[in-house]
Structure formats: C-alpha cells, structure tokens
Amino acid sequence: MNNPVSFSYVVGQNGQVNGQFALNQQSITFKMEKSANPLHEMLTGMMELVAEPRYYWGMPNTCKIDWYDESESLRWILSTQDGQQLDVLLYKCANMFEEPSDELIISGTCSLINFYQAILEKADLVIKENGLLGYGHQQRQGDFPIASFLFLKKFLINQGKWFANNQVQKEFEEEINLLLS
Image: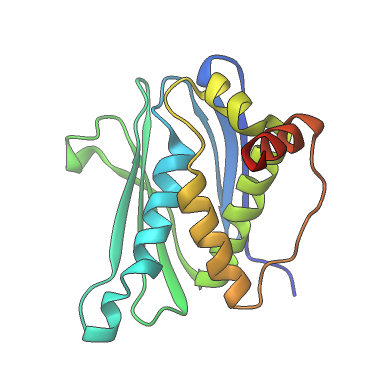
C-alpha cells in the first residue's frame, strides 16, 4: 500500500533547508533560509504526541510546531484522538505572531504511523548522508535531534513498522565507531 504522506528534507549550505511535504494529494514545497532547526522542532513535537498519550484520559493530544523563517514561516498542528489517526494542519505564516495572517495550506488526516514513517525515513537519510557533525555544521542552528530520533525510531520498531536501511556513509560510520570506542 502506498503511503499517502511524503516528505523530503535537504540541508544545504548555511543551514538552508529545502523540502516538500504532501498529504493526500495536497502538497507544499518549502525553503527555509534562516530557520532555527526545523527537523529538531518536528521530531520533538512528534515525540511529544506518543510519549504523553493524553487521549488515554480523554484530553486533547495536540502539538504545535513552528518553523520560523525571515520571509515566510510554517506552523504545523498535529493532533490525535486515538493514537491511530493523525490530523495535520499546515499553515503558511507571514508573521508567526499574528494569527489572522495564517493561510491554511494543507489539511487532512492520515495514519499516525504513515506520517511518522515518512518523516523518520527522511531524517534517517539526512543523518546517514551528513553524519552528526556534518549536520551540525550545515544546520548552524543546532545539532541533529538524536534523542528524539532514536525515541521515535524505537516507537516504530515496537509497532513493527521500521524497516532498516543499512546504507551508511563512511563519515557517519566513523562517528558511530568513535562513539563506541
């Protein structure tokens, strides 16, 4: 079965991030030039939803993820009522502090697992291609969110939904060996 969620994320020079997100045939291409660390914000928000499943107690389980940029920012609102389905709202914001200026770009529902797989598969490639030090050097606004990434990867493994991609660049392999030595 095809995943109705797709995500691309490329960290370029000076922390510039280019990517694309699509959900149920709605899509947006984004370019974040002076953003803090969008991948960190995304993985932290995703972890919040599964680490504290408030829906067990009948409480709203929602996280807001802001990707700030000088010219145009994105606001993600992710929520789940049952831990199975994920409601995704994605807004384009001219000014993050003026709610009325938000423009809804994507609105839809998908499997929480499908969303998490799409994001984590790309994060996995980003870290394997760039290495921990390379990502930090390129991003310039922080390190790769390794703790959130590992937590979410374990979540997918426990769900039986993570399929290993053993394609590792030499630089990342050397970093892992350095950690283990």
